[in-house]
Length: 113
Length: 113
Image 1 (cartoon, rainbow over the protein chains, first blue to last red):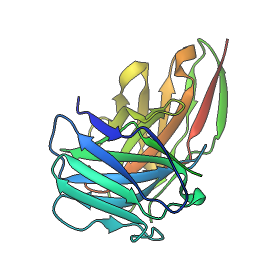
Image 2 (image 1 turned 135 degrees about the vertical axis):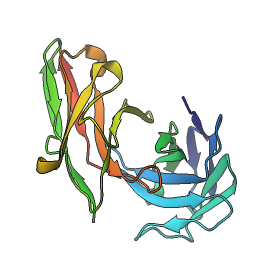
Image 3 (image 1 turned 135 degrees about the horizontal axis):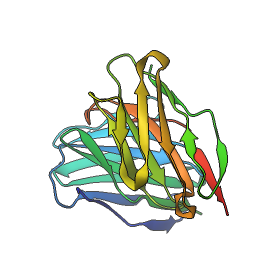
């Protein structure tokens, strides 16, 4: 089946710094990728939809200037958390679509100290 | 607006017993329904999906789900659970890969020996 990877799997950064998370579709081309956020013991919340070659579409309440998304190729989307603060600590999961199905990455745990 | 309700936050089942996890949805168009499983600290694994056709769908690991349009439900079942089934289970609704998914809050499954 289709495989989606994320890098890094775990990152710790200091408050005020920026961190970039990569999402790659390894064996298929994904015109659309999605970014979700999951707080501990909670559900996944859609943050944004990323289309190759165009600007991301953000869900209501998601700060587009804080969560920068770039979808530069059909196999790579990146999420940059800018000026991170402790409240940005969370589990970030991406997914990529092939045909009619979404394939999820393993997630990236971000801890901001 | 679309929504998914998983009324059971926790469920405890004895190993070998049958399992049913409930899911109710609200969706304006034809729903595409999914069940995912998440082990601690891991990404999501697709158990099964319903797009159209037979309302009883079979998935991996011996799971099945039944779509009931009249009840707006998509309950997940397994005839005999194994200790390895202990995990978090999420029901989700969305379009066919075109839109991000809306997830329920999840049901935490505990297996008693």
